[in-house]
Length: 113
Length: 115
Image (tube, rainbow over all chains, first blue to last red; front, side, top):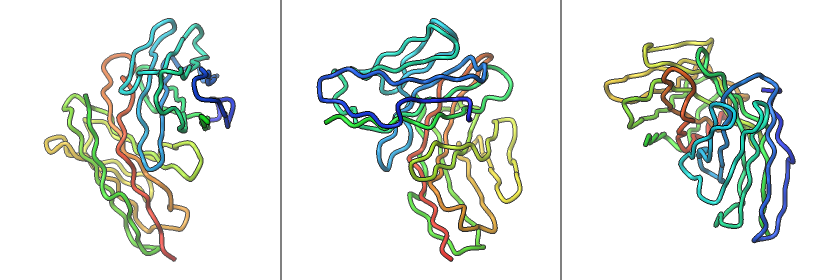
């Protein structure tokens, strides 16, 4: 799981501003995912991508956007339309076919003031 | 879509005793069930997983059982140790050919090992 990096570790933004969270992997994984975690809650799927230039909405996609221009990168933008953006954001990646374990990055803690 | 329920939300056991965490899922198409351990402020780490063509899987002190008919699966930790204290999440998804649709997680179980 050391092959997935997220930056920054902590991020503070003012209400109404868009912010982009970075996720990079060097595991040569085809699939990448974004999850949101709130205190005392499980992880919830925001967006996922199984191949470059293609992605699908997860359970809570409203107020978020993504792009997948490169296999290694899957940035997440939290827009001003997201009503309650303060949370811990986790990126993950996995192989397609064969062993399907999802490896997680270290996370970005976003606080909107 | 898939819905995963996890119980209990908190579990306190004496060191050396066994711990059992149970999950149920709703989508019969789900065929992959991982368990993750998460320490405070850290990333989730996979500890064991099971596919729907297998009923039980063991890895040292950890085992997972799956009942497809009843749509439930359980995590068993034997001879618990202080380092087992963490939050444990179950999850479910379906793989078909290529990649997965993303995991649906339970809300987690805070396991506390009492010395």
